[in-house]
Length: 408
Ligand code: AMP
Image (tube, rainbow, N blue to C red; front, side, top):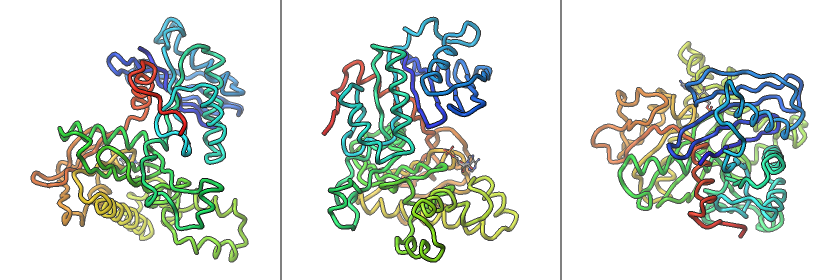
């Protein structure tokens, strides 16, 4: 079975075609500048091994974009299938499932209706995801489509961890609560962690640290998410590349008044001008921050210190929330590659039984245990693979191997 995995943004589209027999990527690519002059498709046949093919053409909308992707997949030179009919199903990454979706779901008219309702909660992302689904429905009628939500894995977070200390009516009126994101990634690495430990996921307490440009930590207890650091939006938790992380809410109206900022301007500061970038004044990129700190830039060093401290604090908090800890997993750009920052985060966690091994920690982008022999809490690097997780969910639903979660 061949599954096309699509991640549609407002002006870009990422895709992978995965052969599920061997869970092998047949082709992948990125289409940029949809609806903007200078659209460019970068297509890589045969996973990462193939030569990159670059195709530029005007792409006014997502439908034309997906048509272009399908054409690239069938092309006689760089294609990997003969006919579009070889695509058995499409798995879509959908950012927000609100409270309606606690699992992936086969898309039908009823689901589409609910997806439109959820769009209010993720106005920058869900509309683009919907455009991708609609384009596929018209280009590939009859091919089953599945929505896999960033939020779904966290729908198990109990009320005590997802209701904010605000008047309850705002939850009732506007569904203001913690949702959590990166769920597909947390779910994938938690499953892999159980495999590596050789123990059932259902009996483990794991903190999964998805540390990329966006960061979130999740407490995965007995296989389910019981707390996670991102919330209603995608700015809470530890500081991120440009996002502020946890800030006393009192600061926000204070700054708005002092600087005469509108809500949109304040939002822009919290999401785009804060975090590693805001503190250091150097960059949002961890590699630049590390380089600047090594050259003696004190604010870059401060940004590193804060990043490590906040992550360490969350790991400790989640160990307490779960009543113990079996493993810590690092994933995403910083988690998979940041040797120094992983060591820095773990310094001070020895009291929990988590001891990092500086030698084993010298790994990048591959699955590895990085805790010292005898460390009672195992520490792992596990590259995330959200596309494969989406394809696995799609396969299971399409083959009817598990029930559809449907709307609650
Ligand atoms: P992502 O959003 O998952 O693509 O992650 C992007 C982040 O990963 C950026 O902050 C990069 O600086 C960081 N990153 C990538 N490679 C490294 C590396 N070798 N060391 C430290 N951070 C890295």
